[in-house]
Length: 629
Image (tube, rainbow, N blue to C red):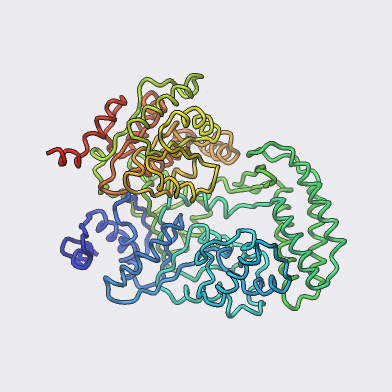
C-alpha cells in the first residue's frame, strides 16, 4: 500500500496532479492490516485525506466481499461513480462493484401493471406514469434516481417497499429489479450501501434470520459518527397512526381487487385506531413522556381479528399472507408498549403535524452492536472526520461497544492556522441572559459584513433560527435563505447559485454538506450544540450513566456536543485552497472549565476575539499578497 500511495508510486505515475499524502498512505496501511488480521480499526481522518481510495485500494487486495456503508447519498455516488472507475483505470482491470439502496428507491413492475389496470389516474399523473412506464422498459436498475423528476405520491404507489412485497411468491420475482440488484451484489467484491440499509439488514437478520444484503466478511463505515443514532432507530419499536392508516388503505384496495370481504374487521380496526390515536392527537407537537395508552387493548384486539381474517382468505398469490404479517407486526409492537418498554429501552410519544408516533429505543446500543456486529463480522473499520474527543476515540468506542480496535487520529492535510480563524468574542453575555438574542444578532451582522455574506448561520433550535432571521435578514445586502421554506437539496442549490448568499439553518445542515470554494467562507454557530436534556432518550441515557457511577454531563453531554461542533465547523475547510471564518457566540467556550475540552478537540485554528482581527485575517490571504507583489 505504501508503494501505491508513495511519491513516485502508482497513483503519482498515473494520476495527473496527484500529491502524495502521508495520512492517506497511513490510513491504507491500517485498513490493510485490519483486513489481513481480521481485526477492527477506528480512524479519524479529516477532509483532504483521500479516505475513499485509502480504504478501497486495500479492500481490492483483500480479495473478499466487503461492504462500504456511508451516511450520505452524495458519498455513495462518489464511491460508485467516481472512485471505483478511477481504481479500474489505475489498476487496469475491472472492479466488480454493486450499489444497493433502500427498497423505496426501486420500481415494482407488478405494481406498475396493477396501476395501469386500475386506471386510477389524476390528470397530473397520466403523463408522469407514461414516462415511468416507458423508462421501465429500458432501465437496467429500476432506480428512481435515473428519472429526471417524479411525483412522490405517484412513486409511492409504484415502489418496491416491503409492505406489499410478495418476495419469492411474486410472479415477477425473477425479473424484479431488487432481485437483479441483489444478485449483482452477490457477485461483487465491493458493495456500496448506506447506514440505513445496513442496519435495516442487521436488525432483520437478528429478528427473522433473513437478510437484505449478501454475506460479507468486512465492512467499512464511512461517516461513522452517525452510527449510534441510526442503530438506535433500527433496533427500536415504532408504531404510528400512519402505519395503521396505510395497512387499512392497502387492505381495502386488495379486497376490492380480489372481491374479498373484510368490511367488518376493517370497520372495527378503524374505530379502534381512531379512538386510540384520537385521544393522543391533542398533545402539542414534540417529544413527550409516554402517556396513558387508553384503548390499546381494543386496538390490539382489532389487529388480531383482522389478522385472522386475512389468514383465512384465499392466498394463492401471497398478498393476504403479507397483509397478515403486517398486522401481526403492529400487534406485536403494540404489545411491547402495553407491557412497558423492555430492559435497556426507553419509550416516548412524538407528535408531528398529523402524526402520532409511539417510540421505544435502546438506551445503550453498545451491547446490541457488540454482539450482533463486532463479534460476528471479522473486520469493521470505522472512519470519519469527527471521531475523537480530546484526541481520544474512547467516547465513540464506548458508545458503540467496540472494545478492541486499533485507533488512530491521522494528522490533517490542511494548515488550519493559516486557513481558518476561530472567532470567540469576549464581550457577549451568557446565552441565558435576556439581552443575548439581540447582542448575538448584532454580532452576526458584523461578521457577515466582514465575510461579505457567503455564510451558514447555524442554530441549535428552530425557534432561535426564526427569531434571528427576522432580526437580521432585512438588514443584509446579501441574498438570504432559511431552512423550512423549501427542501434541503433546493436550499443548497440556491445557496451555491446565489453569490454572497447567507443560509440560516439548524441541525440537518451541521453535517453531510459540501460547498467547496469561496461560496461558503463563514460558519457561525449561536450556541454549543448540547443535546436537549428534556428529550426522553437523552434523559434515559444520562440516568443510566449516573446509575453506573459516571458523570452524565462530562461523560456524555460534553463529548456528544464536541463531535457535533466539529461536524458544524467541518462545513468550511474542504480543500487546501479554502479559507474562512468560524465563529461561535457562546461564552461558555471561554468561561466554563469544559470549554478547554472543546478547544483541545478542535484543530489548531487561528483564534481571535475581535471583528477587526477577522477582517485582517481575510485581507491577509496568500493569493492577495502574491497579487500585490
